[in-house]
Amino acid sequence: MASEVVTGSLKAVGPGSAHAFLGPFNVAVWGSINTSLATTAGSLSATLGIGTGITVAGAAVDSVNVPPGTTIATVSGTSVTLALPPGYTSANIVTGTDTAAIFTGAGITYSGTFNIERSFDGCNTWLPCNIGGAGTLAQFSVGTVVNVAFGEPELAVYYRVNCVVYSSGTINYRMSTNGARASSIQFGQLA
Image 1 (tube, rainbow, N blue to C red):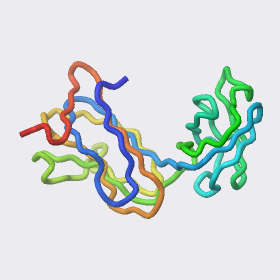
Image 2: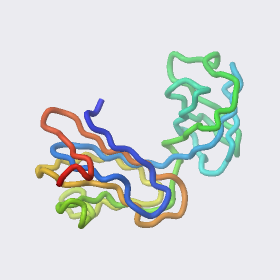
Image 3: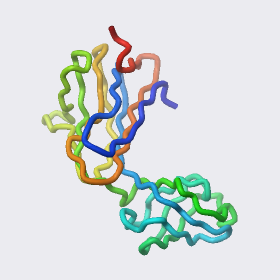
Image 4: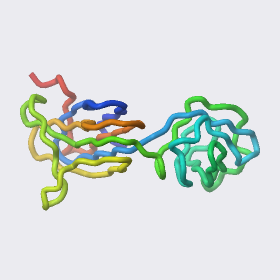
């Protein structure tokens, strides 16, 4: 349970929310697809509203019709077989169509490029971050799932995820921190 969490989604060129972090913090970025999921009580077979974008087994399913932790075991067009987490059976699946189901993880991609950026001057100038000692830019594209931890020693250094090229899909992000030595300041709180 993080003490500060910033989340959002990008579906066009442009930045997400900016926050200043002090101390250790995490950045996670991933793709998702929102489509309907039609299920029948007692059956592991289900139907998606769209078949594009969900092409491989392993995608996580977030739906009121299935238990938390459910994934896709097989996929063929819009027909899927569900895999349930330990302790659940097909009796835990309800009949209905969830029009707000969200799919993430394996095989769920976006088409675009984003930077993890920071600002030292109150959000006027933004610089792409670097990862590792070789100076590699924190720039990712075409469905990359990112989970990275940073440590910021300076007060009021702002971070954001910025989409610089966009073609399709949803780019989700989460920045978070926790602990007595970690703190954050929401954009607009500094004078």
